[in-house]
Image (cartoon, rainbow, N blue to C red; front, side, top):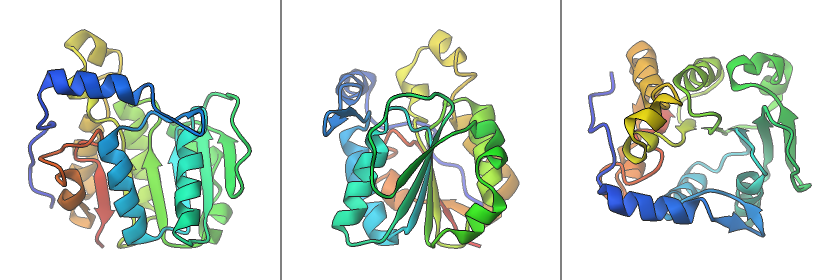
Length: 218
């Protein structure tokens, strides 16, 4: 069972606010990307360590993250396929090796068939970056629990909203993704662990993915 950890980020609020402002202006090859400096570095480490041949991203937005992941995996010499899913059909670039799907994080079975998932080259990396509501995050975690193998990761993004947002704004997200992480680990924590080497690489939970780098261990 994963032991309790500090719930939030070690950075004080004024620093978080300034970094978030830059994050929301971040692009990659002129495509909005919305990644902060800590997680840009942490994902590079994670991809090099795990060398995923398949990446599934829940929450495509404009495709900037998928484009960056594809380029990074290519530079690492990793044959890869990326499936990026979003409930909104937005303009996105054509990216070799990336397939964009219309889909809902709360009903992934309608988009990702068992046949598709069984055929994916492994290792698999899953990134949950949908609407940041606990019901969605918990649905994504439970869905992929049936498919992840030991050593593979599911990353829950933007648990930082608890630290960034006031109570009224956080309420619009029903409390953000962190309650879903806690609920999932209460259910299935014997088979998962929080990768503290990633979460705490720059200080305790100095990542927008607070307690969100989850590694399957059994």
